[in-house]
Image 1 (cartoon, one colour):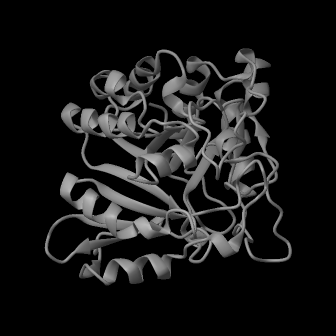
Image 2 (image 1 turned 180 degrees about the horizontal axis):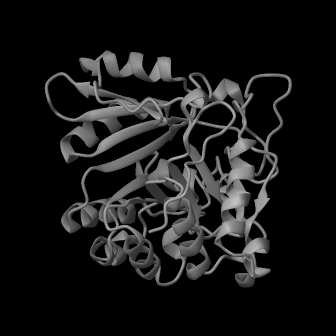
Length: 332
């Protein structure tokens, strides 16, 4: 593989992680993400092909990126997903290649994804109560998520991380039930603060359950200690259970922003690179590639984008502007 200079922004941060959204579609309609009726979806021709995604990933890897996460929308709804995984894995057999999913199709796909070279899965699960899950996701699919988690474990994925978004007055009473369940199942639970990235623009800070509250609730039952191997550039702050039964983490993008150590960039399914979830500027890689640009042109645009990476997201400040796109169209 060609070696290119690393991607370093003007704040001294080196980009090592690339998030690739491969679709804006989803088979759930979670209330904190999108309207019940969904949204106008991207046309098929607007999506980057697997070849285009792999080409951009290769140039990013040549520039020092060593982790790729596939996101959506819901990435498993895109046809022949193991084919893309196989193509990306072939770029660098030691690549840290992971997937964020709602888990609905993992019974069908987990073995093939593992065989193709996927290393890790993160599964979203916000409630263990069937009725509440149905209310939140607007689909009665809790059993399918749980079956998908079991299939991932059987396929040999480890660790398996479970992401839970909490909202006050809705599922904030499930901190301890989720923690007990994840410990028993051997999953690494990550609580995520609700962020202002919903298409409906109904985010309400008063409904946010903060990291401090989550950790205080956990500490009411479990003895925790900070993980010594915590990666400061990772979004989660992780803790060991002192009794040795696993780990738990909190992603506190709002109340404990980690922007100063952020090493991520993300590409939307239609080929627009964003240097932050909350960026209001995008860089059009689809246009460069489809106009015949060579790898050096891709690298040049990568560098131009990274040089302009924001120092932070400004949530809670007067200058904050919620992005026009919501989370499902950006990629988590």
